[in-house]
Amino acid sequence: MFIVRVRFAPSPTGQLHVGNARTALFNWLVARGAGGTLVLRIEDTDVERSTNESEGAIIEDLQWMGLEWDEGVGKGGDHGPYRQSERLHVYRAHIVELLSRGQAYRCFCLPEQLEMDRHVALRDRRPPKYAGRCRDLTPEQARQRVKNGEPAAIRFRIPDDREVVFHDIVRGEVRFNTEVLGDPVLVRSEGIPAYNYAVVIDDALMEITHVIRGEDHISNTPRQILLYEAFGWTPPTFAHVSLVMGPDHSPLSKRHGATSVAEFRARGYLPEALTNYLALIGWSPGEGREILPLDELARRFRLEDVGRSAGVFDVEKLAWMNRHYLKLAAPDRLAKLSVPYLKNEGWVAEPTAAAVDFLAVVVPLAAASVDRLDQVPARLRFLLDYSAARALEDPVVRAEAETARPVVAALAEVLANSGPLVDREAFRAAVARVRERTGQRGKPLLYPIRLALTGEPEGLELDLAVPVIERGAMLSRSDGRPLQSSGLRPIASAADRAAAFHRALTPA
Image (tube, rainbow, N blue to C red):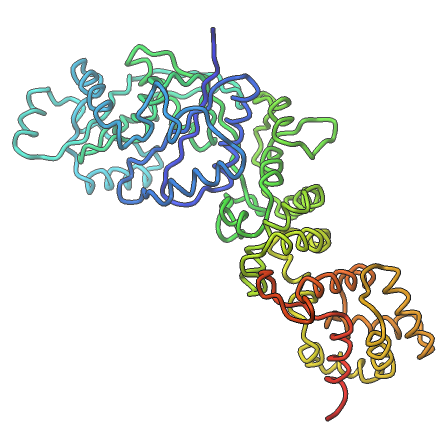
């Protein structure tokens, strides 16, 4: 029975770029949609740049996105090892086979010679390719030079004047003439396999049926197909998807802002928002739908529907999608996800269950008006970092508060003689009493009340904010004593805030 086998094969040389994350997602969607297998392979032959930390970070990002693989690093399987650095013996065995048949040869050209050849070709407006200086050395000549201690790479002998044709699921029919290819290096002089060689060996031995990757690999494909033929193997089906571009249609890079999954995670984007958005770069489910969870994406996704044009990464569209998913997220999940950002502000330590329950009430109120979770603290400053003195540091705010001193005084007196404003009705009743005492209505009444109770000129609706303040104050106090063990910074009640604001406003 035919089973679709795809792979994601990152190099652990840095963080997972969102473009590569999209490629991983497409592979995952194809595997899940076909009931197939996704293999995770680590291409770590770049010894100088590959790190265990990068590998671990990539794996963590994939798992955060919900892209679990079926076989490979961390999972095992029948086709391992799954790190290229652990497969060097496999590459050595197969290169001997090519050398023995004359399909590969040793190249003794120095880097300086190769760079000069490249410079001359570009000057003459010719495709830069290997000049073939060592192509006709006899095996005996090559062995003698190796014996003499000359470093040698191993090159693949590309057939002359041959047209390589393959069908790409995304691109259609693609043609290359071997005259423009040159003989690629298979093994570098230090014994490390080159990408085009190792990837063919790995994909063939791991029985990969579909290679889904970025369009920047199209030019590698004819060389790889010829290698498959040299070993007598059937090439996989190829699908080269467009690259992810910035708003200026250049490759997405640091100058465009965040580019890695880790950066978007750190800013408080939800994984379901990022995966949903990445799936829509270059692909559409039709019917005008844009909000699709992973399981539905897997049912609908088809490589044949992926467009050829470059996809533009639109941060504003991602923010819109994240806002949607924030509104759908469970309150306790939002609370737990927001704790690290609140800790960074020094407002939260290790919250108790009661404190988490409280945050599950207040964080969704803040999340309803933000693009991402790292913006939540700014919306909760009124609650967890209230300061009457700081609010009055702004001369404009102080002047407005001075004008409204009678409202502030009446508010302080009313709240001093009221119980906690635990719901909207209690708050509105208190406002009505302040209105009766001052005769003020509308903004002249509500603006100074907002300043006094939140320390901010704008924010959450007061009849939502004040009951939350009161609930937080009750969490922070028991019999009048602060409960530091809640894990939250103590929250002042509405009455305490009104009194503090009135004192700060009143000259000594």
